[in-house]
Amino acid sequence: MAAASFLSRFSMIWAFVITLALLAGFTLAGDPFVSCVFEITYITASPLGVPQQVIAVNGKFPGPVITATTNYNVDVSVFNRLDEPLLLAWNGIEMRRNSWQDGVLGTNCPIPPQWNFTYSFQVKDQIGSFFYFPSLHFQRASGGFGPIVINNRDLIPIPFSKPDGDISFMIGDWYTHNHTALRSVLDSGEELGMPDGVLINGKGPYKYNTTVPDGIQYETVNVDPGKTYRIRVHNVGVSTSLNFRIQNHKLLLVETEGRYTSQTNFTDFDIHVGQSYSFLVTMDQNASSDYYIVASARFVNETEWQRVTGVGILHYSNSKGHASGPLPLPATDVSHPWQNTSASGARPNPQGSYHYGQINITDTYILRSMPPTKINGSLRSTLNGVSFLNPSTPMTLADKHRLKGVYKLDFPSRPVDSKPPRLGSSIINATYKGFIQVIFQNNDTKLQTFHIDGYSFYVVAMDFGNWTEDRKGSYNNWDAISRSTIEVYPGAWTAVLISLDNVGVWNIRAENLDRWYLGQETYMRIINPEENGKTDMGQPQNALYCGALRSMQKEQLRSSAISILNGQLNLILTFMMLLFASVTTFC
Image (tube, rainbow, N blue to C red; front, top):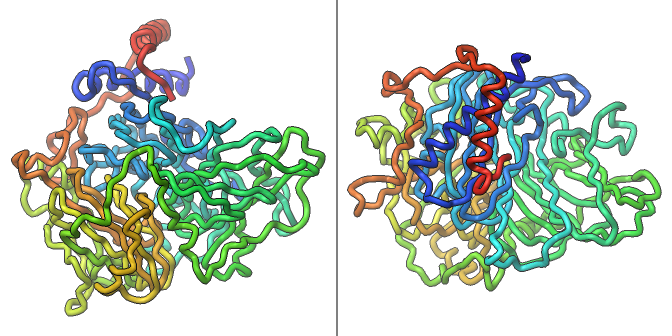
């Protein structure tokens, strides 16, 4: 048996064994679950015509879709075949009471090269469009991402007719240098500069004019006339906001990051880094030719950035010719940019809601971002004057083993102008069941998006200038959309309201990879005092150890040291598939 085939088969079987152990300890009897095996490797690809190293999942770039149903348990067994540590994060998945599985450095030890770790979590009460990605070392700039689709159970209605098909788009700016080279640029104190292109599902642009080189593979989506498709779009790029549009087709907005919206038609839509949206698109054109799918840079000098436009093709089954002519232009007014991206929430909301505008606010956090600055000779980004340093021992692990001095609960709730910017492992000591407002104040020169793990929040206001207390009178207190990732324009602020009902340690970060890499993040630590300090579901049996606790880590079995006959492997695999067939879906 070839070595690659052996490793692949062993990986699957080992993942099932781990899954069985996890199910015995962590899931309720009879709960359905989805089981995935992800082998993370480098491959060579040429999405913009230049051969480069990208990160693949099971040999695919982007990675395969994880499909589950609300309340299902999900097991993802990750084999790290990279030459550096790895963590996978789950953008928008709330991980109820389970920050151990969150996949960021403040809560998880990295998976060392050639090691395996199985994530096990429940997609509790969530429906919609999400994505996974590698959260360490700028790796998302080289790939490793893929979509997550969580479907509704039959007893939970959705506020639109069932579409005829489901299509995911992973869009994002792209550099022809890999993530290690991009890290080096930032480490040298320089900005990354204009990207080399925009990819749609890991592919470069269709040759819509002579500026596009020959031989580039582009994305083609095949559709049937008269049918309606659910189009899920995720911006997984480095730092560029993108305008998404399909020539001559309307985008009916229906969902963002697991929450239904008031249904509104758009000709084009701005999708910022880290954000996910769903649209219903009806194939109602005459198919005289194919149609352009476009993702172009937004809130930059768009004339200079035309060369980085991503272009795919929408192909009707009865199409009469190839797409040609100029690309469609965005129609959205950039002078009022938040009119489409802060859409109202649907009422009634099938996933439940409450009168958030009638709840007393218990605390306020103003998180101010500034342009990168030098701290101890290195270029760093800050929130409230603090550039975050992840401790060598994750905070969840430190709490479990009662380690002191790993982090400090002294993150300032307001910007601090009286002290110079500093490095620190400073986090927010949040109050369980508090109802807080967070003001993202962007005094940087670039548009940024911010994300909060473990939570969705109500987006109640945006405006230019500096936030002041009297601005609360302008809040949308009746039908604001609830989501987990929100844009903040340069020289502007965005206000969100959050109910702190999910215990754990949760990351707050800039989704722009350059700012995140340079330290623009912190965490909220939320403990239920009635549980004697227990933060969530408890440490999983397969937790990795690092930092001050690295001596507790046992060596993992290496696949090269395992010698099992091919027939025995097949027997084990068949047995386990039969065992789980009634309750398991495999990726």
